[in-house]
Image (cartoon, rainbow, N blue to C red; front, side, top):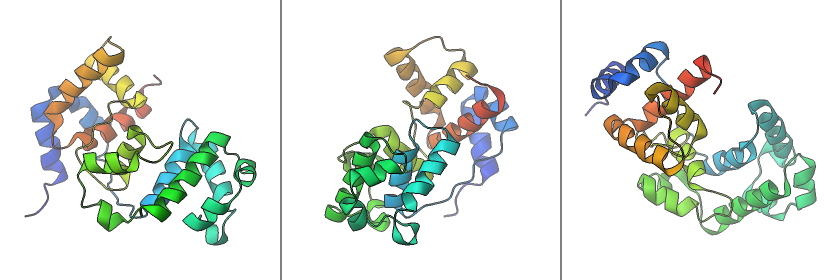
Length: 208
């Protein structure tokens, strides 16, 4: 069975939620590309957290330059000292998290083909065993590495702000998330698609 076309997905989403029309009309359909190196993607995600894109790219490049071939093989990363990692610009906490990811890759494995057989929730459960890896981080992997189409990042601040703007929500905390989850039910099975639309729509139009 062939996959639904972009146009059919867009028509479906607008039929389910009329509020999405201006977003879908204004923003290009997101490009989906798999990244089968889950280990490297997870390292990059941890390095990038709470940093601007420019700062994250700079520090990530410095970390990679510490290793032969610019690739932090798990065994080499596990053995690297915290001071050397910190000299690349990482905080002590992030350096510790990277080493935890390396340890997990060595002990449990992080093979894409094996993980791809799991459900979204099972992947979240598996990878959040790693110190420093939370649900949001794994949701980003599901969206951008595993190419899963129906993930909703309710804890993402960008999504929260975009939905506040689009749906005129004045809630916060648990009440806001409950409302967001209710709205997002209408987007199944393409919640990832809508999240990616919302990020780009917010970035293009609003500074909130």
